[in-house]
Length: 431
Image (cartoon, rainbow, N blue to C red):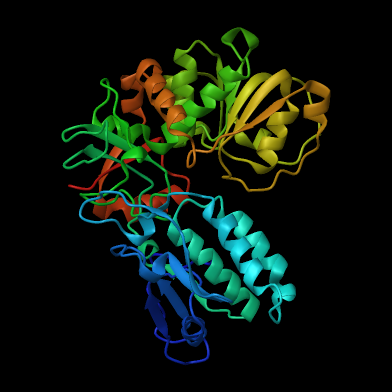
């Protein structure tokens, strides 16, 4: 499914000069032929699934059998959600439905024209649908499959995806809650979880979120502190935990932090230094070395020593590393990591490629640990925030932070792309 152009207006005309045609309809389970005719007629087809879930054709359809019409129904868990349960929130109650439906379709239609031709496509689809939790995603996967088989090229999107409010994290005080463990008055933070990608983000004065997305802000931190940490600081803590999990202690040797002036780098330096590690900071802004040393960096090196193609294996320099850069930088970091060292990868500032060899892995037993902040299980999130509360010096955190108003965000973004932003930027949506 193509969900591009989120948050941008539709063009008034198509490239060939026609007026843009947009169709907006709720998703359905195995829709009728006219549904696909409508998709084919439109330039943009929007599934309007952020409205009240009412059952009917959303989760069921009928097939013709030798004994008459028979219902195929996806069982839905009916949850009490204020003000109502939306289609996009409707969850499957029993995942065995997919196997049952496919068995029935096969039993009654295996002799039908073209069944053999499309059997494998739908058999694979139903196997995958058994793993889907949300009704909307089940419907869109089947709709997209049929469109592909029919040669329909119309762009398909979800109404809740555009325009989306940006901001990949937020912190605030709960005003209403029906979720166990989250009460009115709790101070909470949400990191990633698809904010600004598949759900409205943090650049707003109010937000409606799932309770399981939230973490209570630990006592040492204010809501402003929580946003100064943000997704970058939480990612830095996940990286530190990965180093510890790999057996990297302060006694093993230096820890390199690339992209040191950025959000992940700044918080990682502060955390590692206070945990007793000797930190080497790699930066393209050597004029800001004093800032990095104030956070705890023992040594500051020029990123150009790592950013160009290098030897596949080189002199051992550090026991571990926190990398947010990727590409040649990450390859060179790996090539210079000590035996049984650990390197965490959480970014792609230089590029998504990894133009290296397996030599660091098979000659030095180096571990490359991926860090994902979006889909991290809640248990790991709670551990990360607990450790941040214990290990992060709030005075150092304050040195990394600048606070701006919502109207200033576009200017800050331009400065960020120009490489002129240091540390963390907190957006005060009330300013």
